Image (cartoon, rainbow, N blue to C red; front, side, top):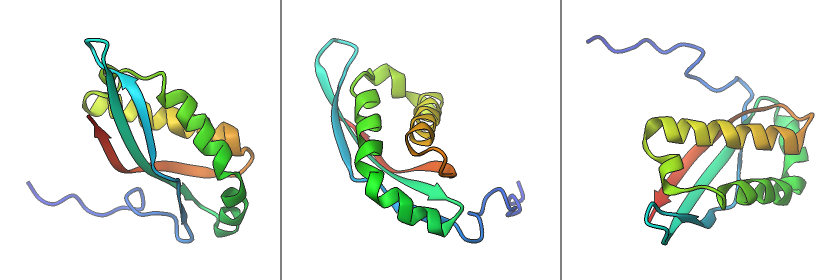
Length: 115
């Protein structure tokens, strides 16, 4: 199979800014009812560099939104690529609401560990 050509969809916007969200470690439920631990490290992609300055002061609000959601998850909710994509979509929805009207382009997973 030939290598897939690089397109604009694969590259960040020309003036994209990436904002790191503090590492999050939360308890989630495993199938047998015992607690499991989810560690999640994410960054936000923003198309407008000046918007990055507006995001920094409200990161605690973003962490709160994420923590509230993550604590309700079960291990089965994040199993497989479909589960990870649903998690990503839900985090993007929550951060978009928390930071409206700032333009958040994506939530990028840097690390995700379930123990």
